[in-house]
Image 1 (cartoon, rainbow, N blue to C red):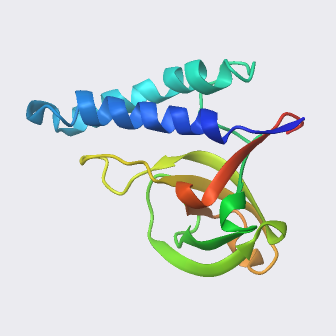
Image 2: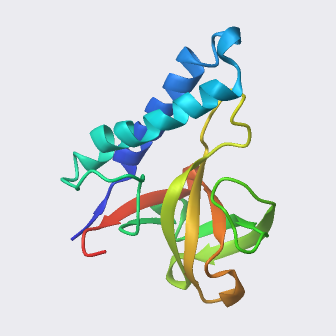
Length: 164
């Protein structure tokens, strides 16, 4: 069974954003790395409550997973205007040197697995505007398979494939 879970993921993204911006960043005394580490511990239980429980998934120790796929948003056509691909090999979903790969990138030529949400500065006001994805296949750029990339949330939908 495949279903669009963009709204669930958006609720999770907005909840994380609100918690950080209203309860950590808003207090100047909490603008420190210890707060970032504390905030990161909230991600898993919040994911379980807002996403996993609603999909009747077993609670895990990581957010998202291989059943969550990022696809182009239908309102913007069947393509992504660009990806920002991590140039480091092997890449990490949380750090790297990101380079624009201009599109259009059509849905039928790429497969992306959702890994996490991303913002440029963990110590600033967060928008979490990007999905961190793992490139599973990419017809035009097979050398990018296995790399992490960033996809603007405004250009994408998230689909859940219960079959894996």
